[in-house]
Image 1 (cartoon, rainbow, N blue to C red):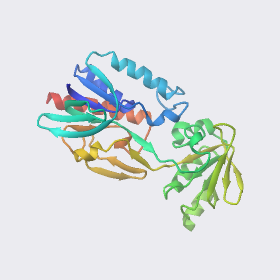
Image 2: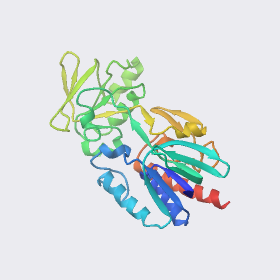
Image 3: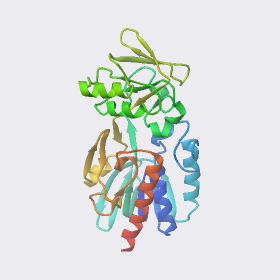
Image 4: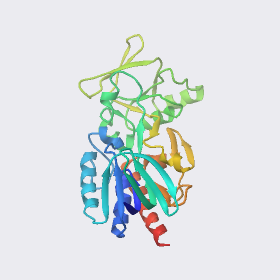
Length: 297
């Protein structure tokens, strides 16, 4: 099963790369485990012509359109290992299936590491959120919170305040310096100290954050910057260089999405610090074009 390119990951970045390679009439195999990062979100925002659509519905349409090209093959599963070969790359799935290609595009995404706070996981992607540009408009003017998980959380709180009255819950994670406290105050951000012990609300809605000692603070949406990890370690197996981003490691790429390993490209959340489906799709397009050009030239 030899292909011009194997794409590991079939979400927004991977499908965008596959579309451009398919339109160049190259044989493409997309390997996907079927667990996109934004599967917890009910709606997606900020993506042209799809604002407010369900992420799964967008992906279903995209997958069907890519699958219509005769040179595209989809394989369901997870990649266990990858290696360089004399004429390209070998990719082995967990079920033992071996695939080979001349080029490799990594687009397998990230998984978020959610804090173990009762009531948080069930609200993730609904009223507990990551990106204000993706979800802030729907909560504009309401009572907003930021759960501190790392030093950069104070900057997140200053940004979230653009959408409404904001409280940062430092959660025993950090103690802002006096000058930072002054800047938070100038921007109208309240500071709540003490550990966050639970989230409360009807269903997946949020109405209050509970602090140690039983104290409650009314909140309608809680933003949190999370550490994340890659869904596969095959970039490391191949020897791809990594960079440190605020929320975890990402794969180092150049302007054409090529990694430090020749003919291995990476796109989407695993290769950039800012994350959205628009960014991921754009990176996937670049990776697809660059992969094709590397095959030509």
